[in-house]
Image 1 (cartoon, rainbow, N blue to C red):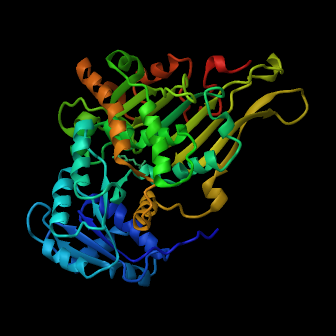
Image 2 (cartoon, rainbow, N blue to C red):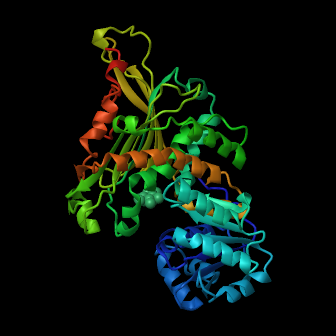
Image 3 (cartoon, protein in one colour):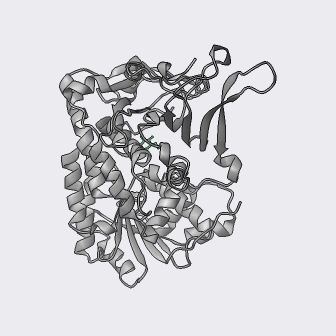
Length: 498
Ligand code: BG6
């Protein structure tokens, strides 16, 4: 099925940190794909800026490698590479600013600065942009980590906000650019079926799992200062929780959606020192299996003793009319057995079993929204086992696999998000108050973990995290849905009618 391509307005996109990992792995390939799709207008420029001294020809050669061999025609490659310009820029010094200003001043195109740098450079870069008269009417894009706690996040936001108005600031959470995450909104608000049962009267609990098989992959320097809670929960997982739990927005207007997400974040029940022990678990992987063979433990990868968690599981609750009493179990970790990201909405059991013992269990319905690796939506229902022999029940999934249904290449999240910046659409970007509200919930958990003096619990690479994670959910009479065991899992022992 052909996708609709809307050509955007001409733009100048300056990638600061253009020689770094993010630009190479994500930004340049995403822009190339959009160019191939015909979405980037003639004359649009991509200006790479970084501290490394090199010329445009060298930058284009690096970009040529970065965009990979994705079977494009030589013309497509050449057209894309011709858009690239390189400026040697010193974020904290004087080098390159005049040249950058010179390149941009004559242009009337939409101007975007993507700060693909460490957060310590956000403030000097914004200040440099203002000083050289480049910030007016421009948009700025920043990525996490936006701070490492509420206080530092507020400082980062204040530094950016001193130069750019909120309507020009695009805080990326790449999970919001994933197709299935956007589909969650379509599923909830473009279908009449779900909304009436989307509440505590009908939903028993929600599980959100983001499991990775990879370890820290040479990112130990950053990761060891962050850990799973800061790296995944504060941003991606809380965003998934917000989209699952928010009230229907009046429109998809950026502030309408973000206002609703903010209300969810503010309604999260704070975990304090007393509840954190019961409602959170952190783990760190030890040597085990992964990548098809033995893999070292996290400590060996970091090269020293460390208490950073590579796994976190939490029980969150939302204190509002819709969700009171419905636990949201969140779980994420590195070096788990499977790469799988999934939101599972577990419904309550039927109030009465009319089928009797012989028919088998009447399992509660479940809606599984899978983000990766294979994007799909499964609605698990009870049906009669086909054939004669009486009434026997069995659970089957109504399955909507995106791959099978549409057969199109699924764009990387960055493709969508970069084009949204150019279009001026902030719906899939986090507003300042959202980021800060998320930290407000995360900070006490971090503080309680620190204060406990206990190290994260060990788990063997290639397993589903420490045993405490199973205990965390089982204390409430439920179990984690894991792929494979999924079809047989009852979810809640007392939730099935036998
Ligand atoms: C990033 C984290 O934001 O998301 C990484 O910093 C993590 O640690 C990654 O691996 C996961 O993203 P995805 O799109 O591969 O699920």
